[in-house]
Length: 167
Image 1 (cartoon, one colour):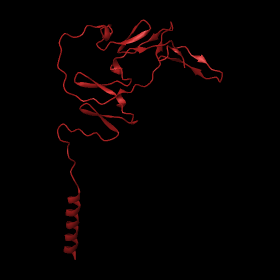
Image 2 (spheres, one colour; image 1 turned 45 degrees about the horizontal axis):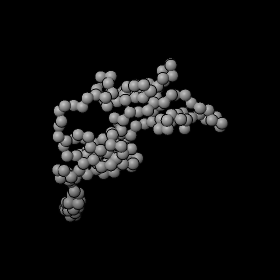
Image 3 (tube, rainbow, N blue to C red; image 1 turned 90 degrees about the vertical axis):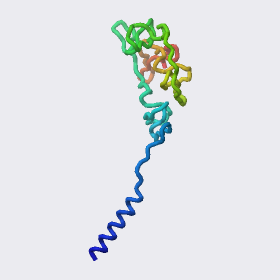
Image 4 (tube, helix red, strand yellow; image 1 turned 60 degrees about the vertical axis):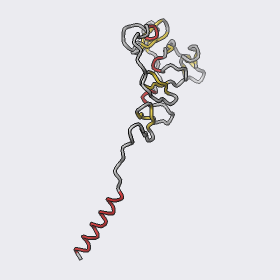
């Protein structure tokens, strides 16, 4: 009886192990990203809200900080130029868009970027408004930080996408 039980136990183990498949690595060049991840260029990134944009590229709405004089302050890597902010990625206090282009042209590697991403060199970057400029490089409009009281007691701020008019 003990031998029969042992034989049945070994047979079941062999059948169970035969049903388990080892995970297979994707063939080189065939990247597979499973939800909630999406493929961007040659890698996967998290898209938790399923909007086709990597979560790391979605900026949380921020209100500009106001100095005591009421002038808006730009957060690094942006610097203030007049009433606007512009990108200064290399921290040289010159807007990147105003710096001379690099004299060394390097051939771009072949990278496939699916909308809303665009190819920049050998990488992909977010272009949510489809203007062919990486969102991280666009000049951010800064509005005064005053608020307007509404009849119901709530307050509204200014809309940078609508000439700084109140919402």
